[in-house]
Image 1 (cartoon, rainbow, N blue to C red):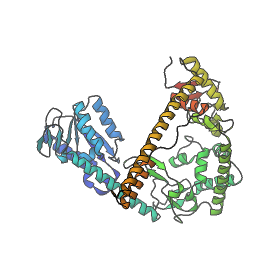
Image 2 (image 1 turned 120 degrees about the vertical axis):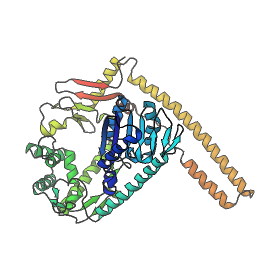
Image 3 (image 1 turned 45 degrees about the vertical axis):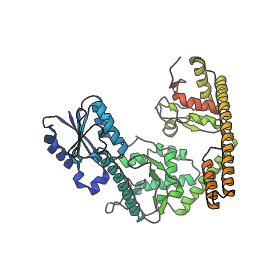
Image 4 (image 1 turned 30 degrees about the vertical axis):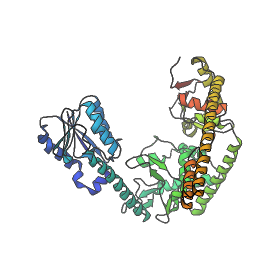
Length: 490
């Protein structure tokens, strides 16, 4: 079969009408006769609204899958930029992977026709084998994508600074104004729940207590409320704390809470509060400033107290199992609580009394002992103490090697310093060059790691080791525990 690959990003929609899906389709259909492909059956693969900077797109993934199964022999695109705007990855597919699979690749507007069985045709010229000349266009597309992304980000930032709310969904408690969607107005029903949460917190209720109360009243969670559904998601303490810390309830627009990892990626990371930009008075407030600040002060005091408590506790190595313990009843990850005697419990039972879930928690130390017994019984040659001794011996060799390297570098640094000094004193170099070389040497040796390798305490070492070999730990209400390892028995 013959594949049409059609892609349109959000940025393309705004600036390039000629790149619409329909116009790409028409261009490819009109070009079939030029390449002797009129009688071929066509399959379309479309990514509408996806960036070309990466290949995490449903349409192109489906195309690659069909190529792996041998369903596709020819791929047609309007130009290189439709296939992708990442020079290295585009080149890798066109110049290597497609050739290995025997795939003919055609970029119509670039005049590029790569047939594995023939010479390359590029802009009407016959090229022998490795034709890198057409890849220059890919570099330009890559650069164009980066520059376009920067311009779009700057334009969006400026619009937000002017007080426009541009996120796809309004915060819980607000809705978008029907007349001006860039402006927030209060959602009376949800705003009452927000006020209730702040009121309950001021009365001394914890996040968990507030969440359980809301679930018992069958009040839809923010996600269910937004989607017009009931019961799919429950209130949890994390949702409560997010509401209690959201400065948009003061009537302010907060910009820059998240950053895109890289151009074209849909992955984002949280930023620190000092990176935020706050535009005041962009919409009506739900919470008074005094009430909001009291919550923040109380939370800060609690955090400081917890931090001081954690500093006293040195055996917090059990924290390594967090995220690995799963409730066998509902399949959700269990929540870890406590420091001195930490344990796991199922939040879906705790917040919503799900009858399938494990009702009582399980101590983390108990889990460690069970895992150790399972390993000693089923894994040939495993013994916790001997494993730690092997680790210590390995680290000792590393430390000795590190110290020898540090001594060698220090001798070299002193020799260089002496050589620079002698060159200056003997007038082979001027004082300015001498000072410049000394500064360069400081920067050079500043990059060398100075921290000596330290031995982990035995419990911490064992916890880290378990994290490497365990996939998950399933805990069931009837006392059974199932451990899924990455290794095979024996």
